[in-house]
Image (cartoon, rainbow, N blue to C red; front, side, top):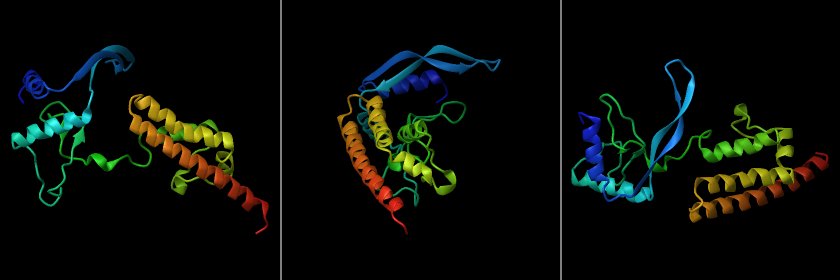
Length: 200
C-alpha cells in the first residue's frame, strides 16, 4: 500500500468483526544518543487468535490472495507467519504464508526453555553446549536432588501460569509434564544412587 493511513483503513475494515484490545504500555527505546528511555507506546492484542487467523485467511481466499508455492508448500497446507514487518517496499500484512505455525522452537529458544535454564542455573547446573545440551558429571547428581527436581519441574507450571491464567488446556498440559518429569527424575535419582553404590 502506498501509505500507512491507507493500510490502517484497510485493516480496520478487515478486522471490524474482531475484538481488539489496545492500551499504551511502557517500552524501552534507544535514543539518538544511544541511551535508553522508557515511554508509552501502543500495544494491541486479540481475544481469540485462532478466530483472527481463520477470519484473515477467509478474507485472503475471498480476494484470491492465498499463494500456493508449487513444490514448496503442499496444496493441503497453509503456512503462515505471525507478526509482521513494516517499512519501505517490504510492507507485509499481519499474517503471511511463509512459515508453518507448528514449527515450534529451536533448541535454545522459547519461554519454557529459558525458564528451565533459569531453574537449572538456580542450583548451578547448565546444559553443556559441547554435549548437545545434555547434563554431564556432577551436574546430574546436583540436578537429581529432590528439591532441585521440584524447582526444575515447577518452572514449567510457573511459565504456563504466567502466559495465561485463563488457558486451562495449557496449564493442564504443563501439569501433566511437571508430574511426568518429576516422577521420571525421581526414579532416575534412585537408579543413579544404585549405580554409584556398586562396583562395576
